[in-house]
Image 1 (tube, rainbow, N blue to C red):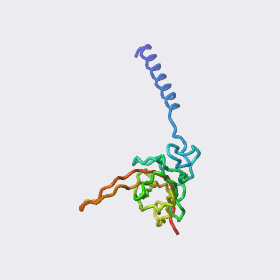
Image 2 (cartoon, rainbow, N blue to C red):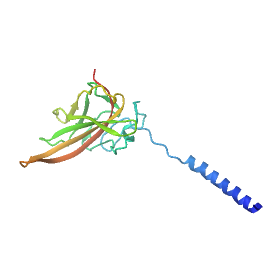
Image 3 (cartoon, rainbow, N blue to C red):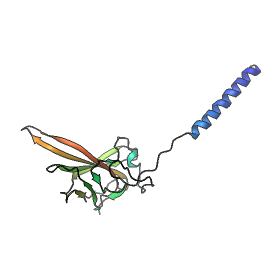
Length: 181
């Protein structure tokens, strides 16, 4: 090996090592989780969310996004405890009379996967205020983050064989799951 080959290899190794150091300094970090489920377009503040086990709601691997339609206001705080009899409530001024507003509750597992736990309708509104105090039975999901998927079913029709209707996504709220006693 000539001294030129040795200098080229040394320079190449130095350049490669420098590039690795520079690139590792450019690694992006995730922003802090929002603390509020927020009004539409506002995912909440960037303060640290309450501690719960497992991945945060936005880290799920099933593409569930935390959001609220423009007509949703006064929603639960990000990570609010729900399932132990606590109320989950929000205002929704986009509700169409004669429609059904319901939810599906999902549990975010350690691997980021999402499993449906339960679902049901929201109680009849008082004006535009919707709420539920549905309990959850003790399970492995207790203490983990969960996603409450809220939808509105409207324009329901039955043609003698099947039902049809329009399903509108309303909100996905992030909660911390708790079991009722």
